[in-house]
Length: 196
Image 1 (tube, helix red, strand yellow):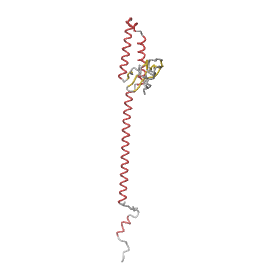
Image 2 (tube, one colour):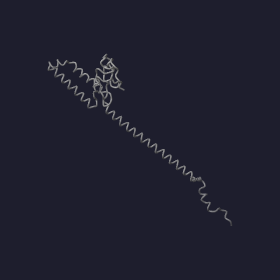
Image 3 (cartoon, rainbow, N blue to C red):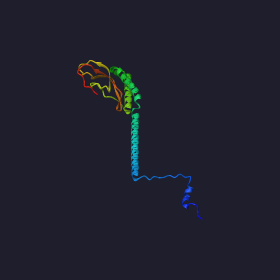
Image 4 (cartoon, rainbow, N blue to C red):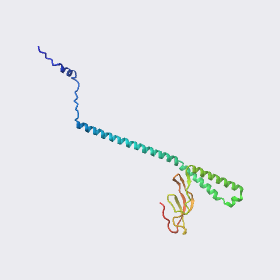
């Protein structure tokens, strides 16, 4: 008798009858190199992205540090401008009283000494916060970055554009202008070289 059954080698095929057969293609050696090159290029691209992100992060950190430092330095600017008005009023009070009247009246002399001491203390406090009076610009060329012209005055002995009088002192806060000096400039005479 002959056995109509197929050999046993076919038995596992029957067991996996519902399973899908996936054929694997083994890339040729040339294709494998290309894939490795693609991966290397992708790695280089990612390295560049990481370096750019790190640089951006460092730039942001530096910018924030500078902004914080500036905020500390210049946060009192608005308050300082208002206090300059107080300082100006102390100066006006001291200039308003004639010197000969102060010498003859002991009470007035004591009052003037008190006003002078208060003005000195105010200026010293402002200096502790980096607020300083600018150098007197009298007999120097007008600088539009530091001065505000309030009027021009005929004076042929001075070159045109020369500061001949200061009406109100200018102030700096650290390295920035807080308030420009209000000045009178000469109108006559030869021109002064411009300050840029």
